[in-house]
Length: 120
Image (cartoon, rainbow, N blue to C red; front, top):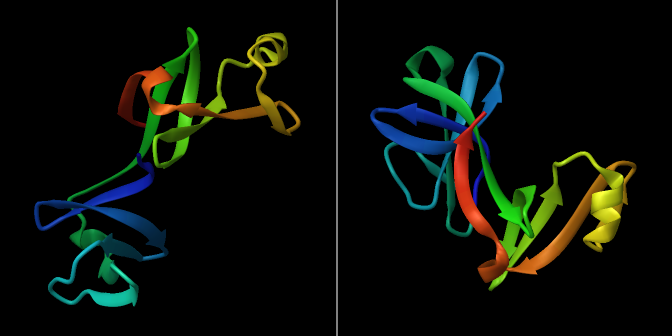
């Protein structure tokens, strides 16, 4: 499940993080100029003008007929955040209040429908 920046460099898409005139690229495996920053996580900085494409990706789904953002996953569970904007619906669904107007819940993966990545 992705929720973050993606950059295409040399024909390959990487998780990315903008940093001024540079972009930090992240890979689960070593590669040309990538250095290990954590177990199984490698990073390389490139100039922004070397990037072929740069965008934000978010994973969305529907749960019980309502729209959600998929924030993360843990085993067979998904962490969802309601994006329908209706507090009454959030209460009716039994969502946890995470912050003012922000409602989240853990649900079994099989209950989430129409899980898809969208370019924002």
